[in-house]
Image (cartoon, rainbow, N blue to C red; front, side, top):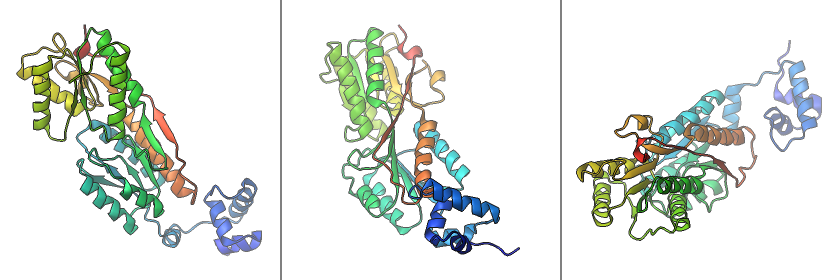
Length: 335
């Protein structure tokens, strides 16, 4: 039997080659009726696409980039697992770009992505990033991008996040309900989307319960030694009875400071943190956490990006998909 190519299908259906190609790829801009006609004839004539030729024609790399600020945070490990589960299913490779919370590295990576090495990118923004022009340039140059966790609010594209404000409010409220009246917030940079929302949740909960926040917000850094020094200073000056950490690294620093100052957790100081640490239950004492569905967030972000890539020209809507986090109480906040 004579092999059937896409040109032959187009001739038989009296359609353009481009229309047939889009119909076979389930493109959003082709009508359902046309898609059904094309698929029916393709099945009838046993049409088999040539993946290699198709890849060359489209100049597709079948590779996506993932730009993340750190890997020590277990959140990103789980998110990458979710991303790779979808990428593998769809036949895509994943390139990991690690910024180490460095804006200049992030900027260099963004420029590198314009060389055609990847088809799209999943991005979580560095805490030192204040200018988003490099990401706007990616979008304007036609590279599909999806933000997850740490997002750029001023860029119109899909964003996959958690309920940072609500979860932070609940974490602070939980400490208050456990008897805390002087709660320190160990904050990530307020210039980052999650930093701002987590701080606002803390501030609102304290306000609603008529508690002061004066001198109780510590904007931490990317250096463990400096963070420990900052936390020790606020402990000595303010003598807090509660700690709400925006990320798990700061909670670990608080544990170190409490040990150094011979403060008992939870008797003297109660601690809760955003964290996906698998060993949170095995710390001494076990750490109460706000746990994010990191795997599902990574999976959803990858699914949406790859769906866009497979349906050429389908827009990535300026939509914010929000997942709920869970408060898990352990010994560190016990009464």
